[in-house]
Length: 190
Image 1 (spheres, rainbow, N blue to C red):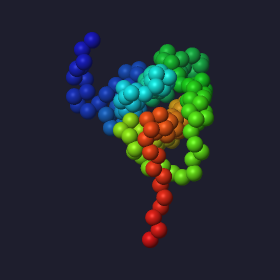
Image 2 (tube, rainbow, N blue to C red):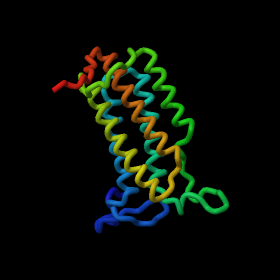
Image 3 (cartoon, helix red, strand yellow):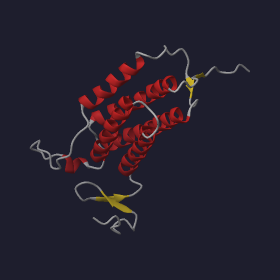
Image 4 (cartoon, helix red, strand yellow):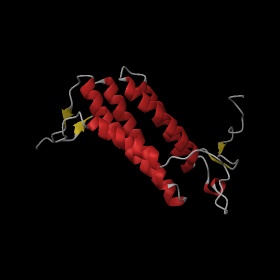
């Protein structure tokens, strides 16, 4: 398989099913930002962290590829009127969301209760988590905009929302595991 096809040289790209859209299309921005998020999660996974967390991040990376495939599939190519799928791609579903919720609950068991917002930082790995969380929120905002134009599977939005929560809790968990300091945000009084 050739890496370069030259089909995008004029600023368009193909969606699943063959239709072409401009590379700045909201659908492309949505799955492109999801891909960027996946890269940051790979960066977190490559740090010195517990194997259980690495395994969870690998699952999340696979789920993000699935989510990207869902976003790369226009509604007219997703299903036939008979209810049968036109393109047979895996789907993010309630099990994917429950996995994130279970991981959040598991990590939260060992963390002190939050009493303040926390400032990102304290350790490079923790900072990577906060960057990933921010990219996840950007992906979520783009997907919300896309959903206003073309109705998407509601599990896509739920997954991204829950994933940003997961990344925040992961940052707190890694702060603890790496013996870093969690810096509380305490607004200055003027």
